[in-house]
Image (cartoon, rainbow, N blue to C red):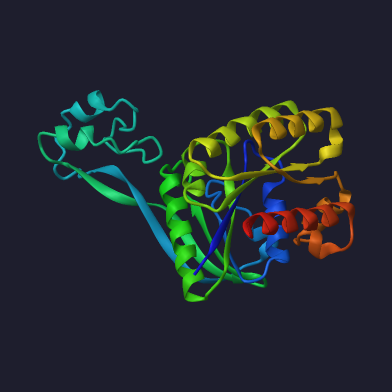
Length: 289
């Protein structure tokens, strides 16, 4: 089965990545959707999923002190570089980094080192198709592992239901979660905006795509905010041989649709909806090559 994966990413937050992914979900047929922005998952706000499965995600260990064995020698507190152990020899789980130094050093073997729940992942059904999504716990790490888990589960669902595409709402930035959401995808759609931070961070995330040999397209959201910067983005993309798949104007209908909990292409005719529809057609055309 020749399944295609599209990862919608951005170099910075707030560019409209999730709104555009939600529109793609409404325009797409025969697709599975994933929300890999596990630190701040919000695709469900416009897709209204009906939960089918809920699972715990365990990817980190924390220290726990057995007070029946503890003699109060203070060695663990002296060795902890994160000040995670209180005067009463209780471990602050938010401060504990799970390094294991206290566990290996305790002379009384009073410290246990156990896996903890770092978050949850879900399989849901929406009006547009299956959605695999997740939520990382507060102050938890290993979001790259959770992104990988979500993507693997989405592939399983796509194979089981003979879906042709996986459309991913990826995380912003250039860190581990972004790399995990890019590995092996058919194309990355980089959503940017014509601001100085937007241009700078677009260049950085396109460099990540090049490093991992992931084909990339660019969508300029709210392009009419600063047409001079939009021109700079287009010039950069031309020089880097990165196609600009679409330019979406600033449109109040996007905010109105968001307040109603739907994507703008479902809300009604508008300039933004028209351009996003055209962008989706360009992405499909690229995938058909």
